[in-house]
Length: 214
Image (cartoon, rainbow, N blue to C red):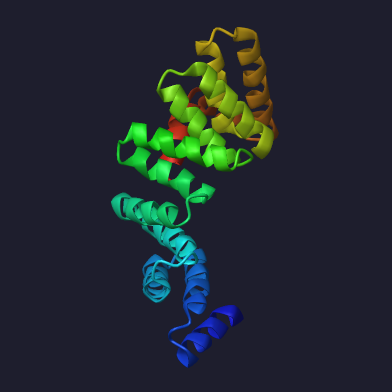
């Protein structure tokens, strides 16, 4: 609350202070006040023009559009972000995801590959590229990137499920069973045993829903 008041006061004293608009927008976004956050980001972008600093602001604006399922608008902001800052790995990753939501699988793959090239230690980027490879029938590519996602981000259910699926498609049943065992142990550890069998069988649907939600 104090930080929000401080940024609001800074804007009252200097309405052209772009950084204050961005910082206030971040706080508003944390409170899911997407429209208000977007207004301050738009103001910041108008002040920053096409300077290097505006790349991050375009990225944040895209995140607010994604939260409102405005994927075309988010895509436009992310395109601008990577145009201004070509080495912006997170923006490339989200650009791939918005392209996926807009049914541009080829463009999504290209963006995911660029994101992983720029930051191979990002587990989200590795997961997104791995699942894109899996959808395209590229099982070895999927295995490689899903394993990298586990290495850098830890074992989560969607990644384990997709890795198991990729391994089975590749004919590596022994390793697939090992991954399934990891997944089952995770589910048991979560102490929701009454739902475990259903969760195991429906993990693919869960993964799709998570993807849609970002």
